[in-house]
Amino acid sequence: MQELFSVRDKVVHVSGGSRGIGLAIARAFHEAGARVVVSARNRDTLAATGLEYEVCDIRDSGQIRRCVERILERHGRIDVLFNVAGINYRHAAETYPEEKLDELLAINLRGNYLMAQACGRAMIAEGRGKIINVASLHTHFSLAGMAPYGATKGAIAAMTRALAVEWARHNIQVNAIAPGFIRTDLNRMLWEQEAIRQWVVERVPAGRVGAPEDVIGVALFLASAASDYMTGQVLYVDGGLTAGQTWPLTVPR
Ligand code: NAP
Image 1: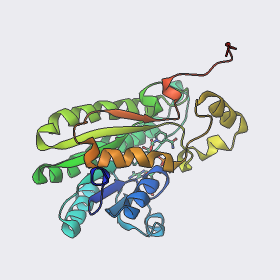
Image 2 (image 1 turned 135 degrees about the vertical axis):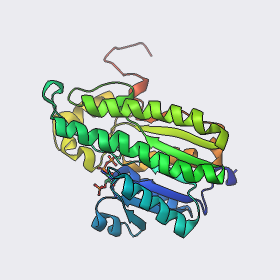
Image 3 (image 1 turned 90 degrees about the horizontal axis):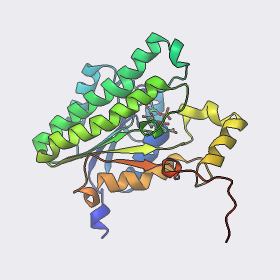
């Protein structure tokens, strides 16, 4: 049974692995004996992880190509890609700044696609692999002020299914994790507002905001042999938020 969930000696690339959800996954896999390489833009943040790293801005296809080549030079293969890098800007839909829209698309969609493509090519050559994209609550429903972000996260689910279908014959499984409200740098300003924190806690059936570590179990499942017959799926890790709501109805016990 332990073998089924083992990631020992697997070569795992975590794009967007310097902070937040990506870093929690990278640390857990390192502890589990995987050969982990994290990548992101900021070298200092990467170096502070203490993990093997590559500087790579996924807006730049040349950087993606070089990053993947260097991992292949050192480790010979890439068994698992966690495609975690992502950003968010919050503005009203009718005045959403065009340059922020372009940046969101360049990172959350185009960059994630190109990273999956580059790692996918190496996996096709190996005849196996696992790609785990990161979707969102916004894949399932909307919150005001984030129309372009939601559009990119809907696209991540579509991309996950499309790559899963196309690469199943190469023994590559492509799935996505859709985190709920997880406390990271991406949304730090939300948790500093008590009204927002309270709003979230009241609506999440689990009754709390998630931590990056809450995502590790599903990450391990999707990266290991335990999920070999599962592909093209989006798994929500959201404390029950997309399952439904509790409400102030009093019912007999
Ligand atoms: P975070 O703490 O801000 O971390 C984002 C990571 O992505 C960092 O490592 C960052 O490093 C990297 N990154 C950003 N732009 C990049 C680029 N152009 N090229 C390469 N790396 C880049 O965010 P997080 O909350 O962990 O979010 C991670 C993923 O989960 C995102 O896709 C996000 O949409 C998704 N998500 C988060 C939540 C949540 O509640 N936190 C919920 C649903 C989905 P650098 O800035 O140094 O590049």
